[in-house]
Image 1: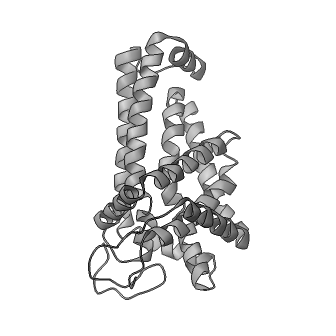
Image 2: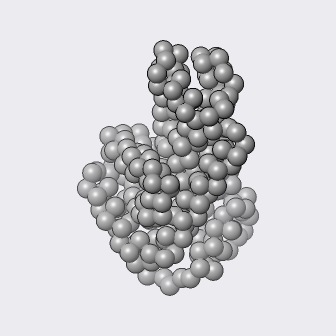
Length: 271
């Protein structure tokens, strides 16, 4: 974690003492305005923004290829559900881009990548641990329920797995349990990260404070945040269909939008 004597640099703000960040009420209009601003940021720097989307898409393709190569094709389904959960980390560079564009600062590849590299040594590393732990719980429960309900520890081919899940009574039970658990874990992770990543990038706060701030944003704006979560889920899942290609465009737009939504949901230090 960063030293409290650390000097302020771009993307590495000086320590800020005081109470936890205050949150605002947000509306559907805030979501619309944030999406518009996020799209504008994408159009302003399409190549750099698209790079982060391309990197994320290639990671997804390689991950699926590895599952097939290892003969664990049954894991494609939980991986497809869990894959969007790690998107906030892939979007870290996009938050920094939007932050600098909002301030009217010029920047290049070196500036953005340096900030991302620096964050590995700071509180965002703990956020990565929390996210990966929840993803591990998701995969573990998926395998456990599969063994108990379907009485299989694995499937040799994806077609056999899909047939069992969608066309047998045991598969329907498995699908119902998996959907409920997956929805719960996704809701938990969304609630503790919706503004946590931009907050950690923007201010000197610990990851616990960042997660609690995210929870307060969701608690104060449950309906609007549910709508934002639905937009993310639908957009990300649709982007996975054409061999992850859609992520090249949708991830950057959602990442830039998240920064602007954070700005509207959390009051500034002097607010």
